[in-house]
Length: 498
Image (cartoon, rainbow, N blue to C red; front, side):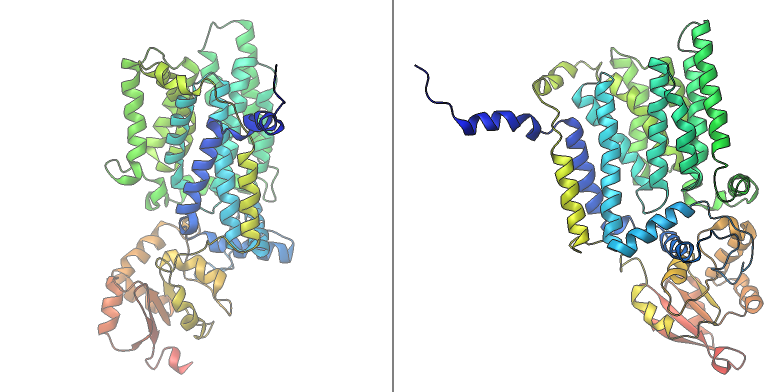
């Protein structure tokens, strides 16, 4: 005789599939945790974030995008294009409503959702859970070089959407690739990385062309890829600057000559911690074909080769390479001799979905009630000196660390113009080289000081210029701590007599 049914057990059996986290949920949780821990200050380590915030406030107040520089006295009135004006507005709205913890929460959730989607898509493409998790976490580790509160975050998302649209087009045909012009039109108002999207489409066209016999069906699909790439380049013109946006991006990448001075445009520094995971993945792509029973297909190979070349040329392309390589890595990991034993524990797992929504709600509530720490790191940024700087006349010409330009432009009260910031294309190579020499206390400082009429100097104490100025008459120390030292001119022709 059967006993009475247990309602509690029956209810638990019903909800259990939703409580058991699947591979994508585990990736979501891990990425979320890592970004929250490392991003509490790390997300705000980029010198451009503060000026993006100020520009967003000004665009909201004026109702128009900037066309001239108003942030520096060295380039005041110079033509300038804000290629990230949409991001600036979003940043100003989030900070205005939730503060910097809100930026931390949304960035962490967005990145967690991105890499969880990558793991889920790898599973749908046939990868085993262990292979999907490993490939995704490696891609996340490489992409972490751009885990900053900057418009790059949107580029990561739209680049991944483009990869997926192209893969669907490659495998199923249809019109999936024609989503990319829409993605490009949106990203062109958020970040200059919009130029990557038609490049991904063009690479996909080559991959699809060599993936099988050159028959009428394949020619038709390649023509769709080509049409999408052209439409994407045209769609980018749907921005307030029109063709000026392309001119601006070309100036930055080609004619300005400043990319050689920017760290993220340098080749990977193999042998150093920041390039370790990239090195592992490159070595894995070499070694895995020897011991794996599976191989990447031609379509995957083209993406890996093209984006590996670009990543080895410029480290800023490494996150894109990681996305391109993830499917190939998952494929070859599944061909390893140990793959069957790794698959077994996952065979009965269910793809639960309840934990990411719960984590999202909890994190947004924590940010809304100001229970989530996040913002500039006082150990890295000269926050304790801001009050001393604000007591100096706003018209005084300030020479400072380049990294602090955005902080000066955004947080000085009253508003103060900077000498320069991280918009290197605005200043040009010669100005940047002269500036770097001046920081050492060399002859360039004498020329720059007299030409620009410098009244205040705010730099790191260990700079050669700081040590020189401590020995020279005509300057007094206004503020000094472990992070910065602020000098004020006191000679007859300087600030004291103004």
